[in-house]
Length: 315
Image (cartoon, rainbow, N blue to C red; front, side, top):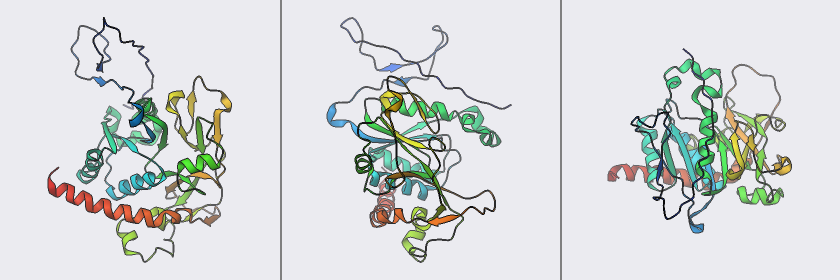
């Protein structure tokens, strides 16, 4: 049997008065007389001093995932760009991946949610598209969890990054591209080929190779950027998102012209993937990521040491 999942957003208006008990948890049930063991904590608006600027939603669930070094690279590079918090959805992951994620959770940098669905037990189903693991529902769930908690939510998979190509971080990118007045900032996609040879500048670097920093090693990409909205990803004000598709949000109470599509000179979606077969498409060398190399290497080395000490301490 093949499973496909639809997504829905349910809004529950709630106004606290003296006659109400303060609301802490909600549950969705189909019969009020049954007992239930799945409850959701109420997402309360924080005070102004604790609100984040950028929260990154991992797009898609971790399914039999074991590449802990890739996770560290993904988190630390996004932190360089401006990310302050990460939300992960996990079906299954190796013990080592979970130990690293627990470290980030302990530091207050990550929130982890179980995302186990019947289809996840049938790997072949996952080849049928994003709906096989309720990815659209997952995207919407993450967006909703950032409402009133983050100025922007960022949507990315583990093999891709929204890269500020002429600035040091996302805020600088948004300002330079004159997108500050927009609520959706969209980056066009280009693919860096992980099957290509390592870049000569880092080919013999023991630290880069040991920690598998492919954003520094793989600099050969396709010679163009996809046209919006094909394969695009966005930085978005989560309060305007009604439903979040894979490559474009559906919004409410926001005009259609409220989307700022980045010029690739200012920012783009870098995707790191191998090819399914031989390709004759023209390629170019792109070393934009090397601008962040010193900071990234220093952070990654430090994190691996910190996680080792964290695990030794039994925290």
